[in-house]
Image (cartoon, rainbow, N blue to C red; front, side):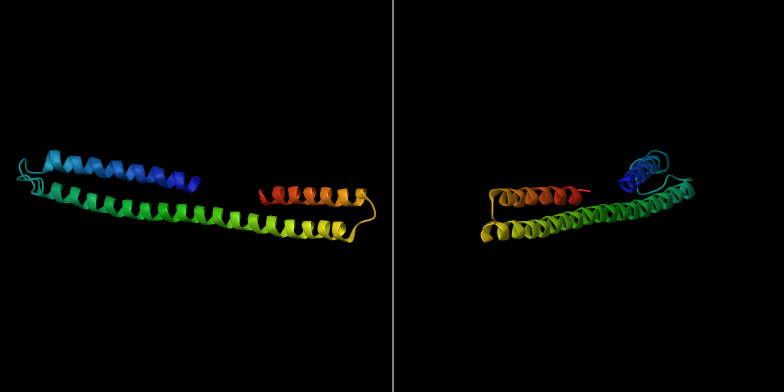
Length: 134
């Protein structure tokens, strides 16, 4: 999360710097009727601003690539965590329900044993959920 925040701040800075350079190029150094041509005598400044804009475009592209990669990694981590949680829940429920089913099917001698099997199943499922959400 912190990495994506830093990337968003860097992207905002680079975007603002690029827009400022474009505005400066248009208002100060470009010909009034053709913004792609420099004013007479300002060719060097016009080219300098063009190099700055190109550099900022490169920086913006790199930041956007890093940001999308960081977000993709975060989504991948969440998906893996969800998969692990489902796997733990499934395995724990199968194991505990199997034990309870055996006790009930065998016809445990008294209702207390059957009740304890059901309660044990519920507790183990609860613990499995608690462990999975950590």
